[in-house]
Length: 139
Image (tube, rainbow, N blue to C red):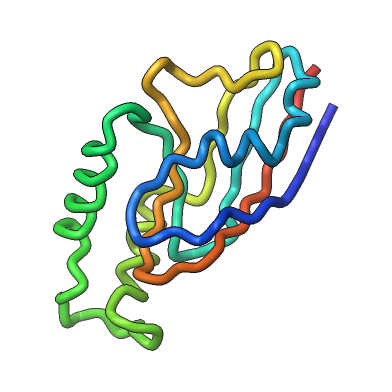
């Protein structure tokens, strides 16, 4: 069985945001799958997805702080800055983390670890709503 749905996430400020429940709330069809996979793809080049700590919000704050040190906006060598100083840096950050994640489905539920959640990594100061393609496959 294959199921696919495109969803829109509410706009968020720059940072790392847990979206696990928002994804599940818009794709209840995965409850039909006993064993399978959920592939989540973001249709943007200035935001990304990852899986990490879901309990302590300081982890998400530390991610944002570290990425801003790793890819500083003040660097003068960027040429692609048409949409502002966060333009090229957002593309670099998105490439470092990636545009998709895949999560096992077991008995109609995401089989994440105890402290794992799905993050939307918003790299733009004002990124707006984000579109995800959710594809579930399994039996």
